[in-house]
Image 1 (tube, helix red, strand yellow):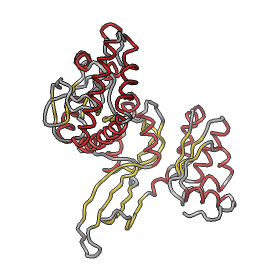
Image 2: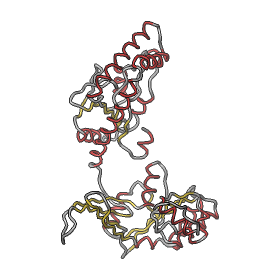
Image 3: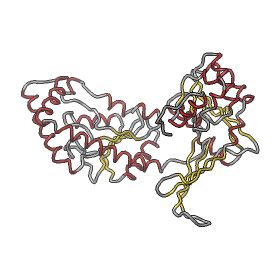
Image 4: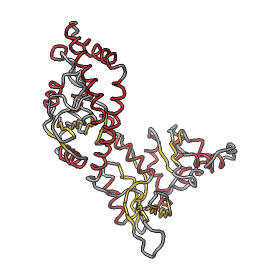
Length: 397
């Protein structure tokens, strides 16, 4: 939950959450999941709470922690992991991915630090097996009580007995639960994504889906997304809690306004805004089957990221814990940055971007300053060829 939240991921899918263990009022054995849900603003999708736990007290703790709890389905009946019903109810229920997304938006928009639990009942086709497992759990609970098993020994005792009584059937039901949770969770995440504002990036992508092959005006659909390899990396690092300095260039146009608005969470103080230059854009024409029909890139502005401009950030480069370069910038700029990094023993990560640009550090001695690189096979073959090394026989690009 913590990692997903820090990465900016609003929906987290799991099998089932932890809770208050049976006899927890005496042992105080309460899962940290409940505390974390109370202080992490994220939506957790699970199959409810296993009935080996004390579901009633678990729901009470969630209420105390300020966690919104809702069942996904036609009723408020709270599921017990292997069973569609636990005998307890949720305060709310939602019946579609859109309703779930609306609930997430309204809950998280309050600015509270607590999260949201969406409980997904086991699919109907697995309910019979689930009920057999639930019966085994109740048998194990009774045995634990009759044998005087208490405290922290209760849960491992029940788990062992359930495994023995079901002869492994619990594993199949568990897999079905996880698959269903992932399916529903992804549907909710897709619905939630439609709520998000769409703005710019350092490369603005336009994707056209072509429905017919010919005609002066071809009907299709258009969607806009935003990226740029360097910007994507800086964005990711920023969302993970780091504060990278992003050095780049954009034009003074409507796209650049969108870029800066979208990147408010990033340090864009080193992004040059240049008069009479166009912010980089890429247009892809895609067939209905998903194949790339045509790609057009307007990225000349990347050539303006010259050594002279980057040199004003030499102190930051020299003191950085890591310098990341992408293949869009000029060779001379790559050479300059690699020289500074090598001089000050700063590790460098080179992201090739595409096969045509993967050769850039290898046209000089700059590649010797690289600590890491992340090429695909085509980019790796380009690097190999540039260094005059043979490509292994049978390699297909």
